Length: 422
Image 1 (tube, rainbow, N blue to C red):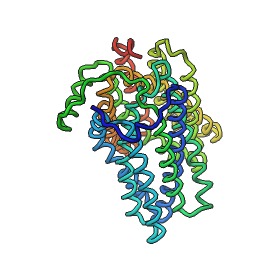
Image 2: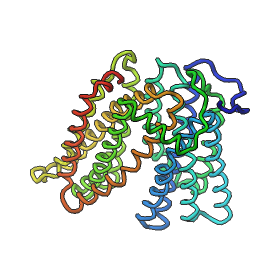
Image 3: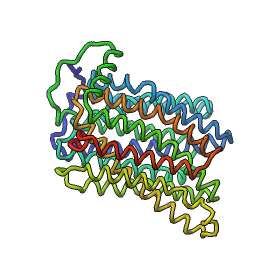
Image 4: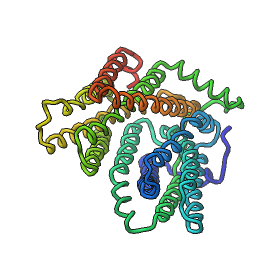
């Protein structure tokens, strides 16, 4: 049976709306702190080392733990009390950053200290994210599942827009160590808010927790995914899409910065437009009737996304050599805005289907498998995208990416279980 703790003996919220609000406020505080810190740390590494490889190393160090330990984190999410895991991992993140802050006051902030901190944060965050994702269907009732996922995506998009902006403003005003302190406080405040969330509001009775070994638990999770055609289809779709989109995202900066010669400010504006599109369309998605199928929206958005990818390279054609740069800038702003919006109408139905179709006792392991499989394919996509961009053509690469995406949309449209689930 799940363990009990002092955390779960506190008074808990019985209103689904308040439960959702506390969850979203906690995520807002935590995400803003993280985004601000990540922006400042990345800028600091580039400024101090002057090395793009050092910056890339921070990204690699933050990704590798998530790839390796996601399946194990999924097992813990299913075997242990989820509320306890969520609160403790957020407290560990906050404590880690506080300790790092104290150490930097004594010896300064070095690249090695940054890498160690990022590595440990990635481990804690992997356990936190998978456990929290597995808990969402238990936090609200069925009728609010779409809303909580839509609002959660809106907060993520908002943090992606505002976080770097605030980070840029604060960076010139306070020492770099203060960003660690700010993020640490945000994590601790988030952990405190999570103690008031009722993680069993919409709990369904589950069988006795098994005492199998971790590898056996991971294998049983994989077998469960194989037995659910709708979930397995989304997993295969997720792997394929992450591969294609990783290759695409390598070509986009090359087209914008190298081939068309946009400056860093213009590139930043183009990048922000994607987050703005995600924010607006996630809000729109939350307003759609929850009792109607989102299948047509899902397939339509995937087709639109495929077309947008295919037309990304059009401005690189010679016939557009004389086009005003302002027109090209507007083109890419609208393109990225539309891609961000389309992604919301693709990702949200997929997330919600997994939450609805996965039994509570398997949800952590399923999320862990999705995390590992989706993340592990990205380096391959980026590598192939980089080779294509350097030796063949960015125009051909984005065209192929769009065609492949269109092909997968056709395959998904033939799966009956998806039509019934979404």
